[in-house]
Image (cartoon, rainbow, N blue to C red; front, top):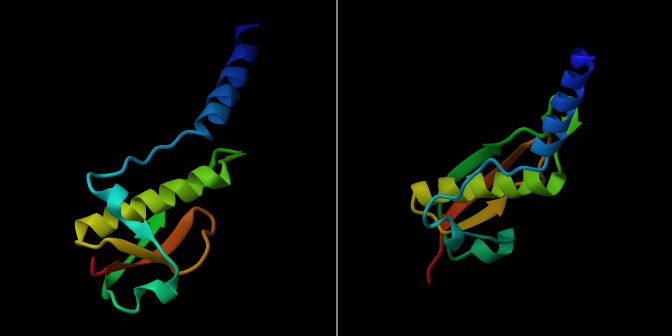
Length: 107
């Protein structure tokens, strides 16, 4: 009887973890904005970053919105580290990975 409880607990844990956010923003990340490419023509390019998170935990796929939120948070953290304040996504997320360009724009 006890052995049948373990798979249920494991599955329950995986399902609850699939909705969790595991990435914390660094100080200053809230000031970094995501914009369309046409909005950075007067900005200084600083580099690029590739964000990567788990798109699934075991057999359970994580929420697309949570994955996208974490990818953006990681990109904002990277922008802060190199003095950027603006991001442009180079494309949509794919399997838990997304690439961003980082800019410093005039105030």
